[in-house]
Length: 246
Image 1 (cartoon, rainbow, N blue to C red):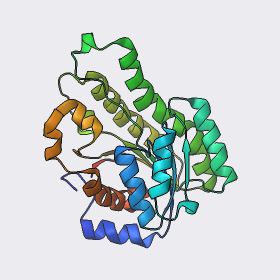
Image 2: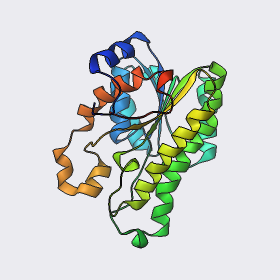
Image 3: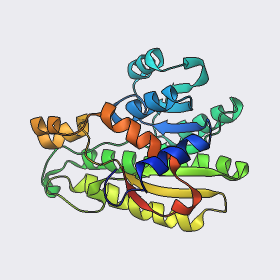
């Protein structure tokens, strides 16, 4: 974990272990950070509820994840409010209402000057990164309120706290996530907390789209996942409204 992250590694690990097995919803579960995090959490004995857009990638994860019968992995698109409503209904029926939500699903525009980004591409970034997060919150926060507890982790970015050329739509979407999370934190009832979490710099397809071959210089998703899992599992109510970094 970096400066601005939560506490020391030993303290976080102790807090993560003390809470026992939990159910964690991860969006964008079938690739990149979401997939690596799901595999790590399952290895530690937690139940994963996950959704992704690719049926092939979801099936591949099902084949690899530890104790597959414990988890609920399905094809669903966060951009669709009705998909998220159906997912929420399914987790209630399966008695797998999450203790933790990780709003991970995200996308980035191809490097381009702001005025050259096609409208459809800009829409995709906003629809996935901002509205997709809102769709999840709309249908899952009421379930957490009913349980009277829950931790909501909205994945932000270093570019949600700074800026870079040629990724303006992505930067705008992650600045939005920071603001949305802070507002949400002020609205939640006792027992719930919302945190904006930057994953740090990780070698993913999204980083490759920006950095090209230089992305290989950064940590892999497999190196990142144990640190991220420990941090996410250690989050507590007093972290409500925080902006943290793995």
